Image (cartoon, rainbow, N blue to C red; front, side):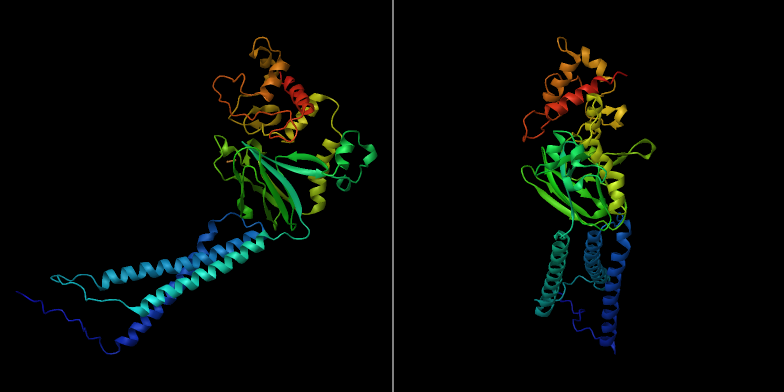
Length: 403
Ligand code: CUA
């Protein structure tokens, strides 16, 4: 029976070994801290532009977490490498390790330090959360509607919001009635407009399934929940044009619920446009758009075109229509629809076919396309409401598409 007597558990440290290992621990600790800070400094350079006050707070919190996480990563990997090298099995060494039962001090340390870190992160992130969710006394509000597969942003016109050159007497009924009503008059746009330095609150509603409203440059993201209104706010600190993206898989056109860039750099789909100041916002966006709905064209076809351009209905992301610059790829092509509609279904005129296709899209599906289009109904207050006046104008416009 051979008892291995070669193992010496009381390996004698060389003289001065105690202070040498203290120096090593200090060096390793500093390396860990500076390594963590380095990781936190370098990594965020791949982030999108930091264009809101909230983005600064969110990024600082992220950097802090990255520094802590980076330091812990270096500690774990450093100890692992050290242990592998220092305690590797030497040739001929077949012994077990020393029988260590436990170390209360060590266990206290690795419980208390993480508990403190988690506590600090909790307090810090809660404070950031409260700060970015707080509404300032003065802020803009816009109602956003998410729908398969487009965004629409609704702006309100009340008597106080009328462009300076317009008076209430100039408006015809029923537009004057809408402007003076309690809710005001609405117009919609596929783009979200605001100006720099002003907090913007976006209330979010979905017409169908869940979506998520995400503007990476503003570092905000909020789900739209079926049957519930949610909201999110942000304060842009840089003028510019920023992508809006749907971040919740909502169907086959999910990828189309985002701002894209078409030919000649023209913007398609949902974008946030931050004007330098309120005056520019009013001059370049609000007043011209308000004038269009306050004084609609007499010709129903022109009115229909204006309604579709205003993105009140989410047609653009699913259909191709050269006249309006639509490049959607989910529904049938609408170029030349005024001609084709006349022969699509025997017994239906072009006008009847188009009306039916909007009120009951599933009735006569174009071969190769599935029944994805919302059914636009005539009942006010229900989902996908399209008043008869809008339907008349849109059909009149579509009938003019003859090439
Ligand atoms: Cu809406 Cu994805």
